[in-house]
Image (cartoon, rainbow, N blue to C red; front, side, top):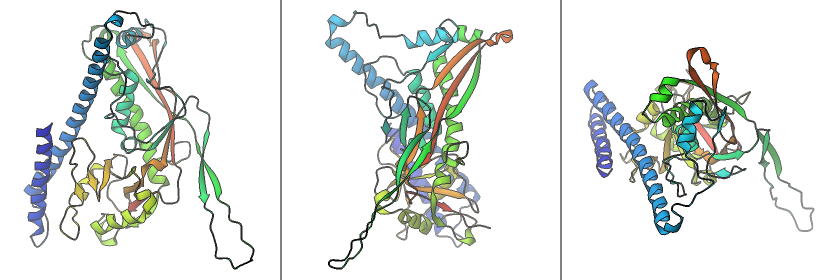
Length: 409
């Protein structure tokens, strides 16, 4: 891992050297060969990030297994004692895949399902519990969902409810104000005003089919494969709406609900500059800007543009993380990428900045996962259905999250 970290930093230094070399030319542009090398170095950085996530996941499993063995060794008298709650999840799931375990398999997380709040959702966070099972199906499926949706990595507030009726999130729409008042004069009343943001439970289902031969004969991680497919499908569908949803019969996306922070110059075809990012940074007022959940969000191609920007002292705005696995930063704030944010273009909202915890994601209970051996009986296929019910909206519309938009044509 240290070698990967060193390689990542070295790639960035090489990329900076190319950009600095171009800066000394009259046109300030990279040559075709230099541009190709620059893109290769950026791709190398991104590939290292993927390997770091895989390594962190492996470390999480190792730590949980070691904790479990320490607990067993500390209590040898209980080692062979039957545990009624203990379940062989892999065996149960494989029976379920073969149609031997009923028509439904209930996927639960280790935590008690209730109305709860999470400031950070990340598969990299180590979980508690002495469980030697490498990863539960529910946690793995959610991990894949988070992996493909940048907004869930960025730290929204997540509410988990046991049922799907509409819930109302209260919010302040106006604050009390004090006025200068003369002695013995009547003091004017000033009450705060309140509103509500409704959160529904929109359904995101996916249907998968596996042959009986594959289920019976495979020696690969079938559980992980199905979790990955279902998680990515649900994550891609909900993640797109969590960014750009219209709010009508679908979630109200973060970009849709955010307010204008900065408009780009007319002469640069929608691109943002160093000054634009500075202005966007300070367009968000200090209480939100200083929040631990304040961050940048943009797509990969826009991040490549941001990596080229320098401040007035010639220092690059983008700073690679000093700690392996931590997010990179722009102006000391973490950067997250999401493929659903618009690319740099005229009239495009290509950069988001603000307190991401003000975006609420509502998730209903567990992800429902069911199987049927009858649906495709003539093809000898087992059909599986995964259903995610969720909604999202920005509850603070006073400027907690703002966007940069390219100038109109």
